[in-house]
Image (cartoon, rainbow, N blue to C red):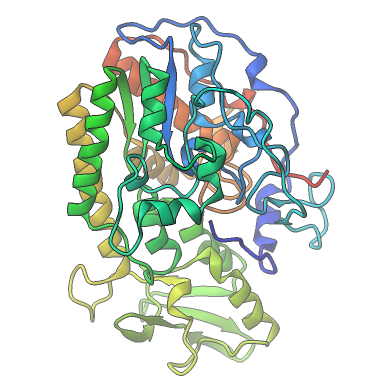
Length: 444
């Protein structure tokens, strides 16, 4: 994942300033459960960072313990030995954390990368982990398949999490280790990373074409079928439902640094001399920023530079916001479907059609994260115990703006539980999100 510098992350202070850090361990809570027609005696999970419990740009123990697979496992009475490749704090990846007590009362107390790194805690397990989620993994990595210009071996060598999760022998895949576990029930969530790099790079990196994804996903399903386990498979959220895409623009509007002109249907930069149209660079040329264009969270440094006067303001075609910092949307001057947002939404829709067909054809539960995240965005958050948890960094999401925080993982786990109950006539209890610690990373 991209490491975010935080000069302009002042916005996050507002989002987290009222948060209190709780130390309660949710794993201490015990629930009775009814498995229905499903057998959870050996529960396993495969996927990427969302499955691994990756948060705030790192993989670390106090977040991993609230990964959605671990939370689901905690609701099943028969599961007592759910192992994950735990990493000591502050983890591996450059964890974004606050320096000092919560709530942060000083603008100097911004989320910043932790110094040092954690180490594996239970690397000597002697068997495959139940949670085989690998941060950065593509759907092709489940079976170790090569992609044009990117072999599986090269992808594995360039990503340290493969060896952490699969071991350092270099000759196994998620699918092989899953088969070794002989699972009776599988949680499977691949596909997010097949489009994520396109989104976070402002459309400057390619996504996996839907026709290729279809071939890869069908091969994954064949491997799952061979285990003879039941499964719940997850679809892909809308790209605009993650704070990495929508948060910075919304916060600048709340700070009245950016405004939308209804007459011209363009965004305007608010300056002492007046308001001026914002220009953005796109693959199709430079143009004014419109309602469906998003400043990515990776533009935080750029915005800070503009506000400090170190970078010329993007108020002329000669100084647009760089292409990689914007996910551009449809505009009247563009052919339908040619914008970055239209392209990636079209890909996600095709991915989700493929996933839905796989669930139906194999009798698996379909966990509709796409619809659930859209509902949360539309409602402005989730009410729990009189508290509204908003879909922003520091609340339902972690500081990196891509990965859910502890309670966001609880939302995902509850959606999985609902789908499992409906598909397999089970009666697994839902999780009370208020019992999950917020898990704001703080320097120790």
